[in-house]
Image (cartoon, rainbow, N blue to C red):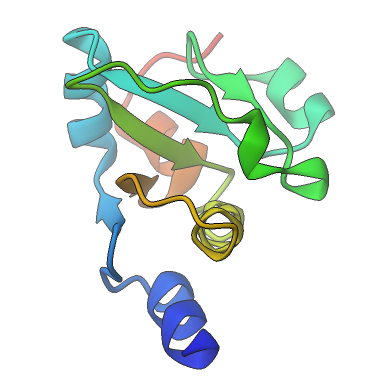
Length: 120
């Protein structure tokens, strides 16, 4: 099962409650007030640039218990620099029993910037 879970999460396929989503989808959700964005990059990376409103929970110290409550109708989104670490965070969350939907932003903040979306 772990191979299947990690292979699907890291390979980009959808696995159970983990879904890959585009920066455009995330932007739409943010604009509509329907996203809780979790930045799993390290503190210094988050300090250098971030998506407005993103909560920094670095992968190196990530614990599923740190996740904020997700309001009804909102989407939980994990992002990192390029899309890899958010997969690791998603795997940790699923492994710890998180059963809500997790959306991984494909391409991370690099893809976000590539779309011309703002960073702080």
